[in-house]
Length: 152
Image (tube, rainbow, N blue to C red; front, top):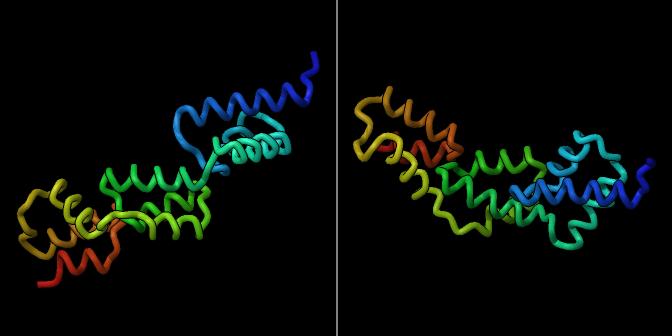
């Protein structure tokens, strides 16, 4: 039995909806996952455009939710921006999302530092450097880290 174009579009939409039911995706992420399943690229584009028009697929919603999720886990703006870019969120949307966020990055950095190392201060330069590497890995700006750990 040969699948009609309508059947193929329905199969793609069902696969996309299963993925979206698990968590938000960017258009690029969903496109990649559907291609890996062997669906036709042109048909995927058609379905993804329809899902966007129906507001079932939204890079804006993904970016907002991703920012909230990662910041709650103690990650800083540099890393979150990089991760969003890797997932297919456009630079302008990343900038808007980060600007609109009501997150005090300095407070988040201090909370993350305290959660990892406790409330005691670093005893020597080597310990400060270790903490700085941790915060840098987490995605906090070097200027904030330096001001917190190395300005005496």
